Image (cartoon, rainbow, N blue to C red; front, side):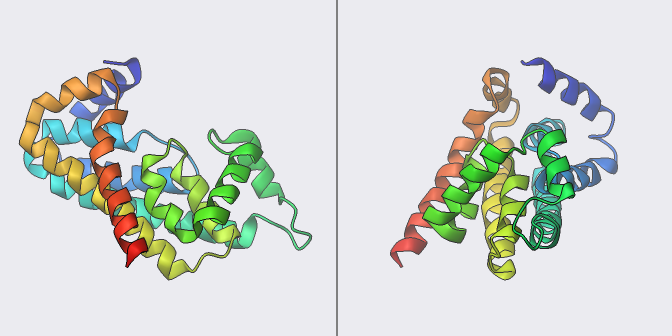
Amino acid sequence: MNKSFKKIHEWSLQYANAKWGPWILLVGGIIDASFLPLPVTTLFLALSLLNIKSTVKYALFLTAGIVGGATIGYLAGRFAWLDPRMEFTGFARFMIDRIPGFSVEGYGKIQSLFSHWGSWILLMATATPLPYGLFSVSSGVFNINIVIFIIATLAGHGIKYLVLAYFTRRMGPAVNRLIEFTWRPVTLIPAACVVITLVVLKVI
């Protein structure tokens, strides 16, 4: 088990059996989807393994937090990221220089993905290693329809965490073996669900 997960696991022990667990995920989701990348999937799994019966509740709270945080990121991108000359504002420069995950290269990569996929990329974003805050801010910068943005964010993350909640309830502590190797394998199933949904909708 990697060191970062151990720290989060030990810290979550203090709260998993209390009323604060869902609220920690809600706040963590807001922060992660707006500006500061956090290992919310790992925290979700740590709390779920300690409170198997609360997995769906945790998934709903985390998804709600991500949607709220993503909306904040969207508004920041829409109104505070570029100046009238289409150059980065001081706020944008601060984010790029100081916040992990934000960079000119990352911004360019997201721009390329949006150019190719449009708003569909938001459904696939949960399967990428890029921080979702990048997608949130970029959606505002590129003026993606906010209703489509919110629906796509809700669908992508809702599917991901509800599927993880289901498998955590079914497998219980056995999920630990996946986490001890790396957290990424446990996202393959929800990521596959998102991709399948995307393909079906694209065909329709």
